[in-house]
Image (cartoon, rainbow, N blue to C red; front, side):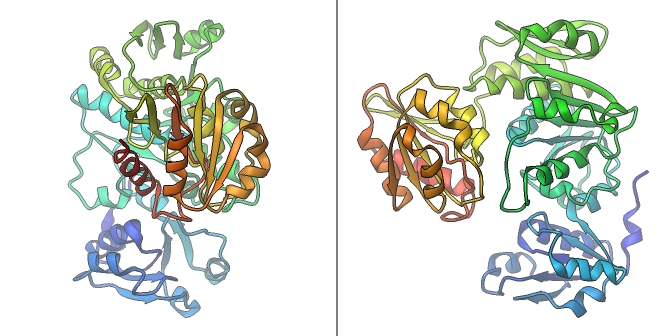
Length: 462
């Protein structure tokens, strides 16, 4: 049963972390009558853009650091997703009886509509967008947000007109999970990621696992049968409380999956069962590159069918969807060389999936913020497909140590120079792929800025 926002009136609430989520959350809380303070370790000058958005909103600001006294004066502390709950000041607040939670967990308590929750290491945004398109084409109103797009507090600000909420959920957002109960859970895949935030892979997996905390007989989990780590998660008793649909690219799994429900890609068809009958969708006109694109389609299709998406509407979207920006995005052909922008590939598994979309003669640009990842899992793919490896950014030395011996490798000083070198090394029939395997924060504000800069450079080539 959803809580009523009237409960927030006169509550003393501290929002930690401004940025986009903090701005939206603070405005929502003020609208509900709460007494709001915003605390951020960044200075007023660093937060100027966000402070401008807050003009006229009656909140108290504590910028340039966190004061224990401020934290103890609150009824509730809410963290933006980028703020780690492991900081000592939050332990101090908890030990003094102040509840600490995250923006997403807090906001879900006020949601009345069913939620499709999408998590995993890669593919979340594409699955979320496809699910939205399948439902939209079927005349079903949705709202899409969470980790990608608008924060959930923005939906609560209104107008709340969606029949279904589609939420992309990161491990950061799941760290605070206690009561969140989605109608559907999609788990795309699971691989090493965010080891600058987590001590080890186990800690990262445990954060992801929290999405299943409140599964019940009304929950349908949609899981990747081809990912051993996801299959292992499915053995958890918490997952077993609800219904499970699997999706797979392996024809051998068809009898098992069609028996319990799910989707299997076989030759030029996708076989789907969410009810008593098996449905068939043709995949010959799919325009997205990479075998993993079929996985994303199957995951989204299963969730959309659960909420009434129509067969013909789904097929129409499958035939027309070109893919998302910055995800194996085709940029242009220059002198017989094709350029692809895969800036959203911020971990090793994403690079591996990108390389699977090409046969050989790839000039690969990698690098960015060093997040302690191990790059050896793509060594074999580098050997087989990459003729030149161009490394740039904070992580270039680590990447070079792990996989630099498996291709002709260049360590470059600037991003622009890396793209220029890649073009100079290319020949007719080659592919220049920018798939960094790292987050962008050493040189760019985000992966979008990085991808747009790559496209800007490439579009100047003659």
